[in-house]
Image (cartoon, rainbow, N blue to C red):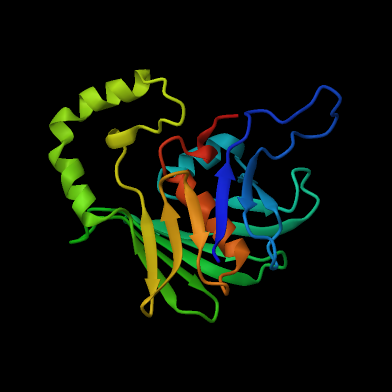
Length: 229
C-alpha cells in the first residue's frame, strides 16, 4: 500500500483576531497512511535568509530553495529542513536534513533542454539507498504538447474562463507526471491529477517525501513559496 502525500497551500494569512504571536504556518503536507512512522501531517514554510522575503525571492530565481518542516502549525518542533547545496548551470542540489542537522537524503533537479535531455530530471537518494531517477512527463505527451503549441493560446483562454469545478488547465497544462525508478522498481511517483506524491516503497523516509513534494510544488506554476508576504 502506498502512502499518498498531498500538499495544501492554505490561506494567505493564518492569524486569528485573538492571536498575539506570529502567523501560523499555512502550507501543509498530509499523509494518507499513518499506520507507520509518518504523522498525519507536517507544515512547511520558507526558511528566510537574513534579507527576508526579498532576498529569498531573488535567490529562488536561480533555483535556490530553503524550507522548514514543522510538526504543527505553531512551529513547536522542527522535523526537517531543506537547504540548497548548490544551484548553477540549471542544476540544483538540495539536502534534506533532520532536526539535529543529520543528512536524510538528497534531491537533484536538472532543468529541461540541458544537454541532450528534453525533460526535467529529478534524482532522489536516501542515505544508504540507491538513486531513484525520474523524468517529468512521458515523452509521447511532450511531443503532442509541443505539436499543439499553435492552438495553445486559445486553450489557455478557455482554461482561464472555464468555471467547471476542479479544472486545472486541462490540455493547456504541460505534462507533469514523474515516475522514479531504482533497480527496476518504482519507489516514488508524482501524479499530476491532484498533485499527489505516492511513496510506493515502505523504506522511503516520510520526511524525504514531504520535502520532495514541497520542492516539486515550488517549481510548478502557482508555486506556494513565491508570495511576497
